[in-house]
Length: 310
Image (spheres, rainbow, N blue to C red):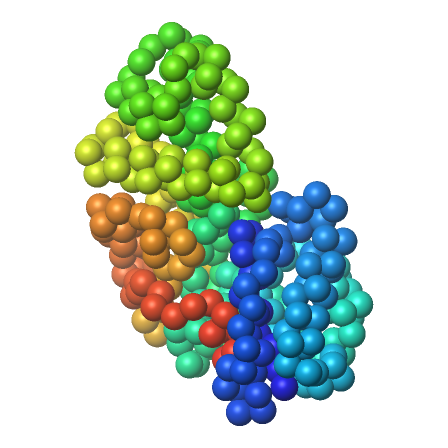
């Protein structure tokens, strides 16, 4: 038996597979990103073991029945993170495993040859690449430290900041401010300031609903050519283009057309058609026109399955 895992900043998908890599059971767990959990990797370890135990117990299995695990984990960014992630699997009793950043999974899911570039924008954002020799590099994913722009949390924070700068610091109601106040049902400046507490609750269901509302508003304003929303979109596109260009320059793609896979809930679910068109146009201009941009059609966890097969 095998287990494939897509560990995200909001939810985690677990697949229990038989010896032919057919799905036997499916489980949806919570966040596995240590940066978003109160006790960091200690919470990751607890959540990982608890979820694996659920799969094992309801299928009458023990950990000794698991041949191998492949997992993509959000927030696995550094050598220290790698040691911590490996320790989480060892403490769960898994002896054979591959733990990598979740940004690599869309590449393996979409391309049987498992090479290309993934731009992943979900709760956060990152850029991951694998060349045809199997060399890997992962860029961004360190929030403010790496200048990330384009994840859901970033969009919400930037929208709040735009309103704060105009409404609170300048006492000006721009079109973005008025639309934001209306969408969030805010009656006063005090209501706006107090709403910050609700927006930073993380895993709270009400907080997630508010985040979705703000993200939807951002893309709606962008479609209406709002200049403040356009400025944020330009920043997102610049971050994506620079990250992909840097990743491609670091690896060796031997003159092939390089597939770029757009993944994550922001790009595959929330983004407007206008934003996606702008992003694709910008990407077509870099790497001497060698990029072929594709929307992901498969779940990232299918990439973990492919890694197990390989």
